[in-house]
Each structure stands twice: as structure tokens, then as C-alpha cells.
Length: 279
Image 1 (cartoon, rainbow, N blue to C red):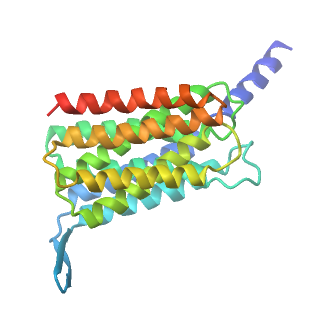
Image 2: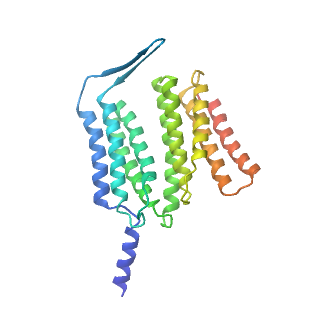
């Protein structure tokens, strides 16, 4: 009886985790895409937009193409990985593609800039981050999973970290405002939508996500021409996203408006105060 009971417990535990074979194959495919970017050298192609009173040039390289390819591979692979979850059933799994795809896309930029030993460190860190993200997303398919709380907290923290890295990278690259605003709007909306959906309820807060993304994009556009450092710009916009998303979650949990607003104001104020003293 004991071995039989032990086997049942092991099967229940394993059902909360993805197949090791599928997970390893997906991570290896993504890392191979990054490695090929490092090994293959290609000329740079400059894409230009020339209109009356407007000119924009974007250097398109193999690294850019491979980063987009790796993100698409992550989305397709995560869809394939989650289909084996016993609790998914006929539900769509599109929400479980957002954070992993964004993670791969954001990791591609710093890897393309690193070289030597730093590249290998970044490559190993990317493998670890992918392992954690893919497993966490798989766990969140079933809100009754024992590790759901840890997976939710990890994905929430990672979402804000990815947004911070992305906006600081855009600031560092000197992206034009017409490119900066839609990227902030789209990324903030997707991250906010995913974080709000992690509450376990089967609902999508599109109005909140759209409103928060719109506010973040407007603030980012207003700060575009300010003399701010990378850290300052990232803290201000990310702190705003964090505060507004927290406000939405507090109101969804029926927390009184005054207390919910005060908590969000403290979060935003702390982030902006840190931005003043950090340059």
C-alpha cells in the first residue's frame, strides 16, 4: 500500500511541473538561436523612412532578426508545452505566452551587446531565467497548485523587471519618441493585463490595462526630452506602472478607495523620490 500511495503522490506532484523533455528541448532551441547570433557575422542593413519633414533610420542586423525569431519560438514552444497540462482542458493558453515571449525578446538585446566572458555569464543567466519563467507559467495554469503563490509572485516581479529593462534600453539607444511611446504602451498593457489575470479569476481587465498603459505612455512621452539618466527614466515609468497596477488589484479586492489610493501613492512617491537622488 505504501509504494502505491507514494506513486500517486509523485504523479500529483509531477502534474504541476512541465515535462522535462519538452522543457529542455524548448530552452535548448531558444539558446541555440542566441548562440547562432554570436557565431554568424552578417552585414548591417539600414532601414529608412523618408517623409516630408521626417527622416528615421534603423540599423537592422542579424541579431535583431534572431531576437524576433527567438521570441516567436518561445511563444510557439510555450503553447506546445502548456498543452500537456492536465488542468488546461479546452481553455485558451494565450495568457501563458506573454511573459515568456517578452522575456526572450528583452534578453536578446543585452546578449547582442556583450562579449567575451560577460557573454557567457549572460548566456548562462538567460538559461536560468528561461527555466524559471517557463516553469512558473506552467504552474499558474492551475490556481490550486501548491506552488501557485510563489509562481505568481515570481512572474509579477519579473514582469516589472522586464519593463524596467526595456524602457532603460530604449532610453540608452536614443529611440525616437514615435517609437518609444507605442513600445511603452504595448509592453505596459501586456504586463499589466497578465499581472491582473494572475489573481486566479477567469477575467480580463482590459479597461484597466488600457488605461494604465495609456498613462505610462503619456508620462514616457513627456519625459522623453527631459535630461534624465537611464535609471531615473526607468524608475519613474516603472514605478507608475507598479502603483497603478497595485491600485487596480486593491480595488478588485474591495479595499476602501482611500486606503487603496494611499498605498499606490506611497509606491509611486517612493520610486520617484529614488529617481531624484539616483543619477
